[in-house]
Length: 337
Image (cartoon, rainbow, N blue to C red):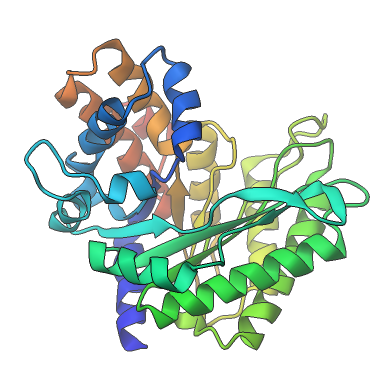
């Protein structure tokens, strides 16, 4: 298993984080529609290749999560996308779940699918150059949710997936996302996220997953988007750290937070505060999608051929996130571009 430890360490080292570029074709269409760019295979490739060939790939990005379409594409220089990523020093990864569907027995909740045929797909992705994987479980918060059924079913799926990924020689990212949507308080988020994470690690243990060769991708502890509660960055950091220290086994090498609908600056500021206060053994970094790409996407949409300008916008955002992963970010640095 030592090879898995090396891969996880390489992804997480020196404040580097993960670029989540695994949006499905449907999700990418929504993102491109929002900036009035046609969503076709060519445009999706142009945008992603622009990011993957930026300077910050060498300095800030330790891993890139790809989607099935992207991992099979070639660049304008006729290199494979995994080859381009590897040349920068980052590790290519792949999203392997097939999406969240309605959970039988609890229609308001979701279960993530994709276990059927996964062993064979993992072999194919390994041959294409992937060395880590991602699977996302989704949980909603209300008085009744997440239900015991949702927690049990999603934890079991995450653990089965993780065991298969390690069998195939790849590091599994375990992503139990408790959604921000709702009227719940930060305390509710803390309690429910604690339950969800604990259940996941119970299942990972049963499935004999080697935790040293995994990465956790959780949500931060935040009040619901429809609640009237606001909490400080310090409170976000303190509650998030307490939740993780209480529920994540010490063998896990690192935590790469999802941004979960936070703005770019919110996600960066909160990550910075977490690292300023981090008194755990865990590396705390980022695995951001929108919170890394949104400004670059908006800039690029004005002229999809302005590669250099788009890369400069992306490089700034990635640098800010990496500073935050080292506890060195500040508002003055944020505004110094």
